[in-house]
Amino acid sequence: MESPFQNRLNGHIPEPTMPFRHDKPIAFFDIESTGVNVRTDRIIDLAIVILHPDGTREQHTFRLNPEIPISPDASVVHGIYDADVKDSPTFKTKANEIDKVLTGCDFGGYNIVRYDIPMLAEEFMRVGVPFSIEGRRLIDAQKLFYRQEPRTLSAALKFYCGLEHEGAHGALADVEATIRVLKGQYKKYTDLPAEIGALHEYCNPHDPSLVDSGGKLKWSGGEVLVNFGLNHGKKLRDLAASDKGKGFLRWMINKDFPRDTQDIIRNALDGRYPEPPAAKQEGVQGVQETQ
Image 1 (spheres, rainbow, N blue to C red):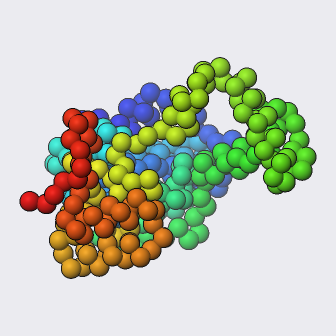
Image 2: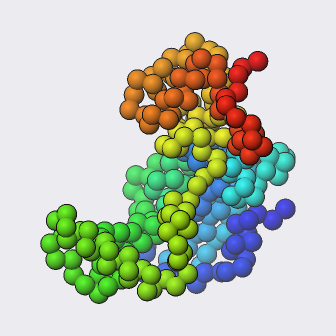
């Protein structure tokens, strides 16, 4: 089966040369994975396009068996399911080949500094293959985007209204600037909602997979899972049933987590759990008692 990366690249082949000088090949790469935790999730698709200083290019794609289940939420995003990778090679069997492809290259990509490079480093470390970014130059298009298009109120006032922000960081001046920016946005984007309720939903889209306001707990398969840290992906029900897990949950109660998160944790320690979203839609009220 052809990789999503191959589909993407076949649909739009970039120019073979870059608009800046480079004396080493640049390996632009992107990862699809079992989830978003760079420490515990695994790579299932890795695409690498190497641009050489002479304008030539190489393309490499790796479909991998992560040896752990793919999160249903991740599958919805990238369209890759457990059955698609069950017969694929593991990262361990391909690690030396991937390392060889990347040898001598600088790195490029979008958000690679925060996501792709740390995840790749974890995979290499897990299988005992040395990997380092020391001496490599990193080109991150996301960082360029944010540097060139700053997300400050002053920049917004300049962009939408063509005005300098006099008195920046004074409370009243900032409020007045915000009102001007909002009006300017409505002039520029004609498809913005015309009613405040719809505008609220546009600004604050609801994620039905989240259980609490802080996103520390999420729904998956009708179960509440921890959505951060070393216990990421573990069922709340399982944690509440073990001594070690109870210690972690009590730690959450004593830390500065949102009140609704702590209430859910307290209920779990008492054997009570939220109803899954589907049950709520059917009009089932209250909390689910343990059997």
